[in-house]
Length: 306
Image (tube, rainbow, N blue to C red; front, side, top):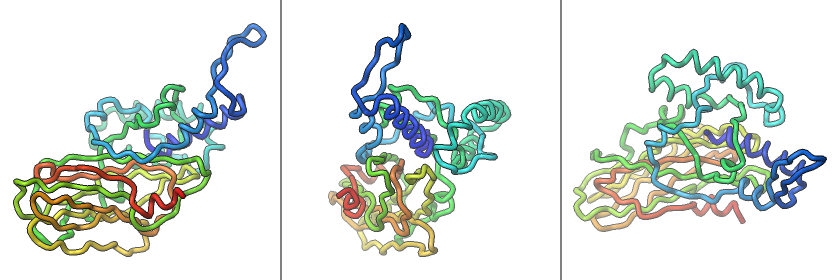
């Protein structure tokens, strides 16, 4: 499910849990002879609201187990009106989604991927059970670039050197923090990624590409970023990368230099960031030439947590 739908679902579940249990411990049993379901404890609510940044290999086979919500074509008529308005629209949205799915069954896979990338105005709350919500790392996304990423210079090299193509590996970063009830606003270093240049790597330029961006703010609205790819340049000096400076919210990967055996750090920097509370962010690299050895929060991103 995409980040916006996940935030809406979590917000509703947490609100209902607080209302029914006042953040008390999980309880179940009977009341007036009627069985009652267990509610979420305060610790469980906190675990839903916050997930520290993790960067892991992205398994493209996950598309075979995609959330059926992602196949809906219910964009028309829905607006970013917030989670309060969503509750009254669930019944109508579910029937609309069903008819939308039936009508789109003849579309090919590329058409479905495009529809998924354009579903940002779909506030339909997915059907989630408690076990799903207690494992927020189980994010199922459909491979592909969002609209802003596809419009960026992802297919070109920004280092000024000849590029070398090899086997692409993709890493996925996943983060969410609703605990402060506000957006995290920062510019500068967002995420860092360390790569070891393999001993057998020939001189050349090896792109580090931004494959997918999915960001949301506190109001459960999608936040769009235009993107600029970076590169690892082996055997010569890399040309510094630069933002587009077109006034949009941007993410730019740096260009770095190194030699076989070196470990280098590529930084994904933000500019004009309006504020975010959650993201799924994917980047790719040439695994024939580079080995991903680690990564994490950039200094400006982590500085917002203090």
